[in-house]
Amino acid sequence: MRSRSDVLDLAILGLLQEAPMHGYELRKRLNLLLGSFRALSYGSLYPALKTLVERELIAGVDTAAPPPHALSGKRARIVYELTADGKEHLAEILGSASPASWEDEHFDVRFAFFGQTDTETRLRILEGRRTRLTERLEQVRASAARTRERVDEYTLELQRHGLEQVEREVKWLDGLIDNERDSGRERIGRGRPATSDTEGGPASPERGIEERR
Amino acid sequence: MRSRSDVLDLAILGLLQEAPMHGYELRKRLNLLLGSFRALSYGSLYPALKTLVERELIAGVDTAAPPPHALSGKRARIVYELTADGKEHLAEILGSASPASWEDEHFDVRFAFFGQTDTETRLRILEGRRTRLTERLEQVRASAARTRERVDEYTLELQRHGLEQVEREVKWLDGLIDNERDSGRERIGRGRPATSDTEGGPASPERGIEERR
DNA sequence: GTTAGCATGTAAGGAGTTACATGATTTT
DNA sequence: AAAATCATGTAACTCCTTACATGCTAAC
Image 1 (cartoon, rainbow over the protein chains, first blue to last red):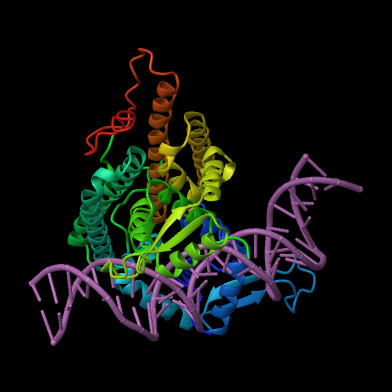
Image 2: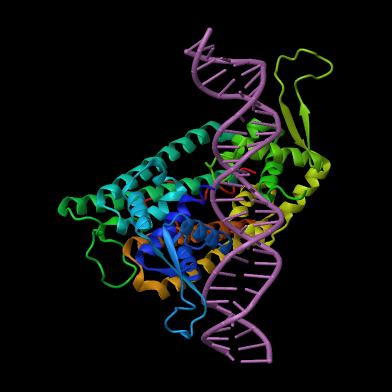
């Protein structure tokens, strides 16, 4: 009875670290976080919560009938929060930078919780990710060169577009890496993102991502 | 005993239409085609081939022991090719433009076989895809606006980057759509819009499409 | 003569989805 | 009063991967 996706577990723990929440709300936040739109189903979420409770990493409090006030009005909903074990477990994961961290499935979630990760680990993950992507570029370019002639134009265009997307992602990473290097060099604190930021708009962390346009 | 992924079936049929092939080779071509790098495993491919044979859409010929010459040297390998039914089935799929065609999982494969698809269908798929993506942009932007304040900067940056990628894809589609419109109209003058996609980027977009053939 | 790559398959299991089942609360 | 949306869960099923099992052939 092991598993239930590492990624989902981490996403849940990370979100609960920010604030206790019930399942339904968790799902919405999760959908914004992961892949940004693919809707995670309840059929995945609730069983995952269940096993996390069994492992005592989170605890659920049913807000329906709090012994003192019998009629709090609200209907049954179970608000989950991290246990001490859960916090420890989360900190352990967020402090690590294993090769898995920069694979497709893990990277986005790890990145989303960079606010709870120290600069050094952030850098190692970003660099690992960058290496992973450039390896991939090499590989695809190599095998594309080998099959060049027998491929029709649309297949070729699809490949070209795919490569361009990856190249773009590498540039994005370069910006982020520069950013982290700058911030790592001036302060030694834990966590804390680089920018003082806050001014309005969907502005990107200053120098990081301005390429294009 | 239905199914075995539509997408995989289509990819196999489409590739076999181009040329008969054995499993091992099919896999390599498939990996270039789909997602461009994610390696499809034999555990998926061979069972899929098996059911396609059972459905009589393809037929496999074992090249190991051709009755006439007992020692052709080559080891056992099964070359698959489309049956008449298979060709018909493929043509039917490639002629359709159902909503499924422009969903994430299907679109790439449909696009890869545009060479075997008529202009009108190509256009409908490209436009459907474009609509799908812009809907998604709207949706994400809307829910992002609602949660604006309580999201930290890294999560925000991730979302911003995600949106940018989708926007880029829409522009790519715009270029392709213009291209198809021009060719559908059997190229009358009309200095083409040149698809404002480019900037410093490496690849020269379009151009490749729509020549030779 | 041994490593690397060609070639074909099966069994078990992981990670998720859809569809079902149920009911409360809020909005129109 | 109806419809939407909040809220929680389970069962069955899908699609895929990993690991196993087997053996040939080319190159070093």
